[in-house]
Image (tube, rainbow, N blue to C red; front, side, top):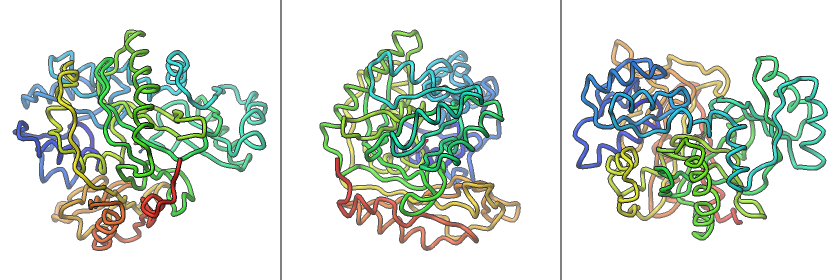
Length: 417
Ligand code: GLY
């Protein structure tokens, strides 16, 4: 396993439940993953280093969690070393790494998405801001064209804020993507993809803003839940048939077939589902909720995709009920987080580590913005929320914060399409 977040902790726990998995290793990992996998320190953006480690420890399968190594071609290096790898090639990872490539693929595949424009010249910015945003649309959507860990996006009704974000990106030499605003509840649908074979997982929803009621700046994700009781099954089928399969086929047609996890971030608009973005890997924190409900052994599923045999894999089985994940974040996150604080009560079922490390004296301390993901399960969303919030209330981390409204609107039946 490559990565160090709660997503990777969740993947390891699901792999550990697979009777065909007999050993787990992770690089670089965190204080929580150290308890269930051998931990190695390599530069995960260096394909030769990752492939060398995999060869040295005799790995049968390498699973790459984060987008940065994928976009840099680490999966290509692992495959070139003759080792099965779950994660797309550098060429296919452009579906996340370049928003303009993704738009091009979607246009060719006939997939509904926001209209957009890439700006790379500050002199064109004001005219472009006039073409997007209010009064024509509810808000401006300003994105970094490249990777930005979820924090490159500003959605705002304040033109000055939209302009300041765009100008800052352009000053830093990053092209800016202006998009039309997509109205409607958001859905994250993950699919295991191997060429044109698409196996969807349970739909989930994440919470990107830092504050309750979707207030404050964007983050990497403050919580998630699955499944979505308000989303009709036919819409999941529609997303697969009208969006995921055509995009997978288009990537095959372009000579860069996708193998790995294709994450469709969608808005369910009044015209139907529309793509907000694609990611080339499991989402964080949705994975923590989705995998808590997966009954099918995960190792066999990922290995089938990595070896071109996904079409032969039996249908997935899911546990009944719901799962809710609440992220515990460090003081000041999503700004520069305070780190080095001692965390207590962070052991036990449903507590997944992200920005944690073990100090020489044995204490677990915070080392990043998103520190823990706390997962609760139950027969329905209300019960899963109770379980997650009960667990998180027993954890102590000075200055930390979390959202209190994860899955609340859905549990109260306040979301509809
Ligand atoms: N849940 C947002 C992301 O993984 O990018």
